[in-house]
Length: 328
Image (cartoon, rainbow, N blue to C red; front, top):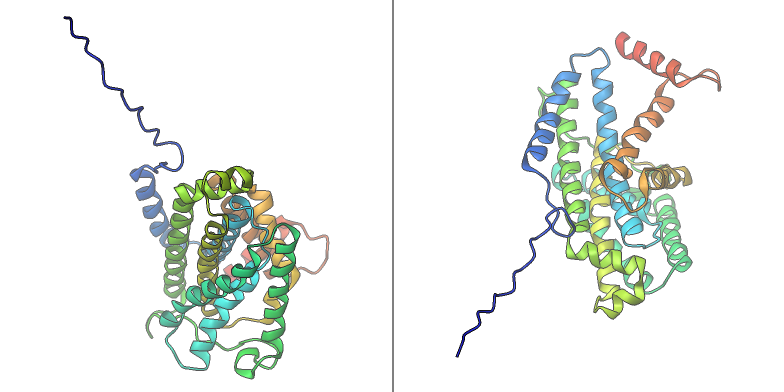
């Protein structure tokens, strides 16, 4: 009787370049971190180096909010327009704790993402059971309610209708002033940006990210494969709100206050443009991250340069701003 040897089935090799197992080379991460640490030390030696560092801080804040919004809208297919309101929730939470209760800004800012996440939970429970335009309408309603409350609410919140105009900024000690303080603010914003970017990237390239992408592309198929549509989207909504609120808290203490003008419609358009132009449902060099890198400096240049006529070009604006920074 002859014996036949049956080979055991071999498992296919894991494709680490595919989601949800995608990995980033350690040398790329290390090089980015080192570059981010060294960059302000090089820029501060330039005549307009402090201004360039300020632009980078603005980019970090804008990029966190744009990436968080892209997570739910681009990847999750949740057409929420509550992102600016959640940013304001984080900003007002930290601002009230510092302005009215005398908390340290570094402690108060940690509560901004928590309260924003709780607010997102309250919005998401009724809203995410709906579809399409109804989600847009309810989230815009929350945006408008938040605006009205911050304008007409208690004075310690509304500031008489102007918002919180005098909030303590981040302090790194009496001896840390000028360029050194700007560099420290850059590192703080960069740390926030790095954490938010890593978590969002990890969520996208995880089973959770695959699940929400499946629900976005074909909800019927996703549900038939056992995906809990409501629970998955609610979790994604809360994660997005967490980092949006954190960015709002940082911005409040960086600017020394938060105004009710944050609810103005152009703010929504700016962030939405970063998502749409950068790449809806994409990440990295082709996503909102890249568009925020260009949109933030351009908007800041036009807001801060002394424009005396509407036809002033971008080159003239940059030259004017550079002359002002050199004079300072």
